[in-house]
Image (cartoon, rainbow, N blue to C red; front, side):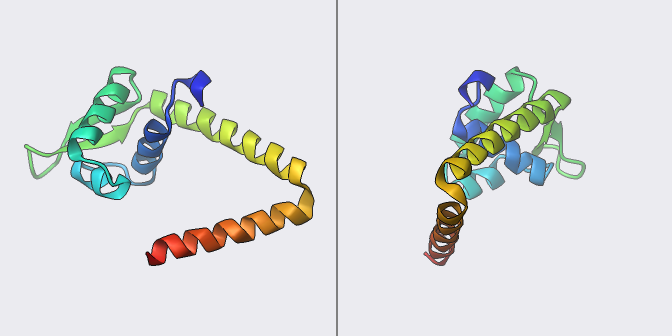
Length: 116
């Protein structure tokens, strides 16, 4: 995702805000297991690029919600295309049987990580 100027934390934050528009700084920090200061820094960086915007919470004026901009949606769409292309190249190189085994193993890893 380097050609898009996105590091993994940027992508993760963009996808989180896409899935749940209106997140506050504390919520993604808990989900991403980073400090609120780290999220604030990421938000500021993506906001300066025009990919995120902060809006005042409708009931709590001291709380700011994070939303994707049109530019953020476009970058996220482009990043998803890059990721899909990488996945296709990997599965093509592995072949159908190995790709199916890899998916099964990754599903087991995901389940074990959730249980931990």
